[in-house]
Image (cartoon, rainbow, N blue to C red; front, side):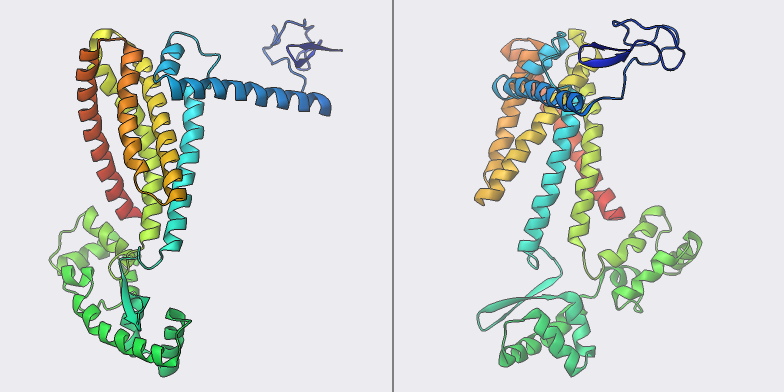
Length: 372
């Protein structure tokens, strides 16, 4: 009843329309349904799985070899129709970018946990008997209103290893910080002149206000009633007293992943403009852009890993120079122009790409601040 063709189990009779099928029929010539029997024995399933992994490994090896030894070779081969040996550009980009941003989030979270307090711009460093403690601004503001028992509990959380005399000294220093923090006030009070805002809880009212009510509030305080002002007030619980840097950076990373995806077709347009006399199709420039951005993720991913393991800060800088050289070599190999022409177009592309990248980064930071 069943026939095998190129490791695919096939029907001899179409299950959908009962049309007679031949071994070479991958689809039913009568109704178009795929000729593939899904009732596969375990042994055959294992065989197909192993074969697919081996086949992918071969493509990955060929792709990696071309990428790391001959900049632009995989792009040029792909455009010349030699595609079977390489991992498809889109699939490679999706896989590499996923790993890159996962790695970026992981490294940041680990760094934040290891340096908690020093990364928090709202934290005050208080030194008692040569030991430095991180005291959050909210703790400083709340300290004068606490009972003796609550103060002792707070100081034990801040300095769990300190003895009673050290905690007393710490308490005195925290109390002295209160006047400094109170004098600095908060950004929303300084801008609006609303003296009733004395704690983060007071800012929650802006989130509950409708646009109409918030507009009335803004006009009463002689502030512009527009989208930006309303959005900043609604975000104020996250930055006026304490800036949630961890949540902000996660939003930046998430937004950056989207922007990098959008940036690829933009770079393809820049390539189309720079090489307009070469009469290349747009999709050819897009393939180049996808390949290069994949290399950027691989390069910076490796640099971040090396920085993380060795605690050095030089790998990212070195990788940036390597990627600049890689871009030049890729342009020369793919577009096949002389050294002088390639260098000139490399400079033009680098300048325009840098400008677009800076605008995108500014947009990412602004968007992340408004919506983190």
